[in-house]
Length: 560
Image 1 (tube, rainbow, N blue to C red):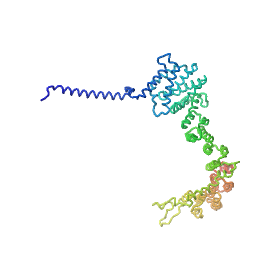
Image 2: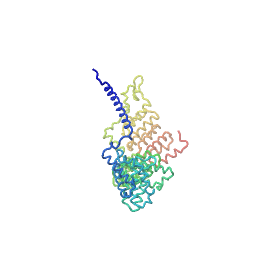
Image 3: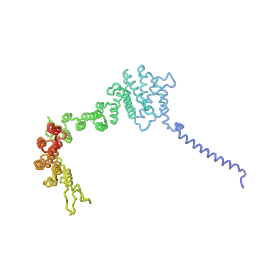
Image 4: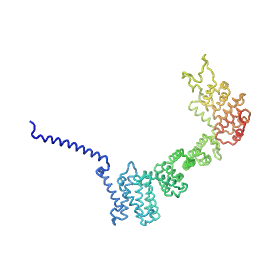
């Protein structure tokens, strides 16, 4: 049988459907509340510790601004309340990996604190006779500067403005004799992030004043900014932020201040100089480029790193400081020799005078033993065996053949002028400096397998094979200077110049041998001799060589 009361089940069903609808509405309302952060109950979301911190800061702010206008809330009490805020902010901003909680909790009070700050005395603080009230305003300015780092308007540079006002109040306190209060003006106590933010705003403010008409060469229009720069730069250098310190000095065009720092020592000078040298590559203005390198040079010199100082001086093209650097490096003989090797490598024609090791140092600068040391290294590496062009071509591995595999129909190998010329160059470069090869040094057969310019290149290749070995090389080349073929003689003249490239010799054989050919009648010999002299004395600034070449340059009819 069916139940008598049939309405109840239907009613229950209806209620169930209604409950489902209500639950859906509740879920929707919950989602909408979650989407709107203003509706979330932040009090319930905070921990007990955070809630206590929030209440403590709000109480301190209320006491600081004397919200109830109570006569019992004196300046010392307000200072104590401000001390609590300062302590919480400093401890929270010392290492910022996220937005500190005190900054979050003080966010709603930022405008209130700004309004209260404006109500304390005049702008300059000179009308405040009460030291405690002046100290209160100075510290409140610091707090507002920290809060403005995340809450202030970026274009208005509020953080910098509050800090500058606070700094002026601290200076007034120092003039009034309250040195203890003035000593509280410590930028570093607010953490590295605050210092970095402040440095960025200083650069913006500096540029704004320059655009407004201030002369960047004068310090007076930027006195307040430069005072803060003098504090920020040593702080950054001492906290391994040398790059940021240099960037700030470049931004305010006062890079020379880095030379006055005592915080640059043997532990960090390399990082400072390395950043300066790398930064110089991005300097578009020649004066800025020179200033950056000059700063690196002075720091190296101050730290007695004369070799590095010499590298920077060479990069600047300032060869006048070379004697001074060598004189200052008198105690470290090994470093002095290394400096001479650097001068020789850069082909800088410098003569050491008045030194106990004068002869040895001049030999190093003149690369007189370069060939000897090069051959020693080659022997140690066991690479003295001469190589042939075929060792480079490896044409036996190719199906199509190479320079040395050109054959006629009968299969006999055919000499090609172009292939022989290529082999001459390859042979010279692969055996450069080793003093021996398998084409030119055994006999003269290869020389006469070429014609005209090919012969010239073959005889000139001897200079590259005998590179830097002036004494032995000249003995092999000299006989070609008396050949009946002008192209062979011209190649020998080139070889003399290549052989002596970068090597300084007291006898000066290159100039002696090529002088007569420059004055001769053969146009090919003149060209080869001039080129040989240019290669041999490149970068030496020899006046006697200049006097020899200038008449040929100025001559109107110098063609063949």
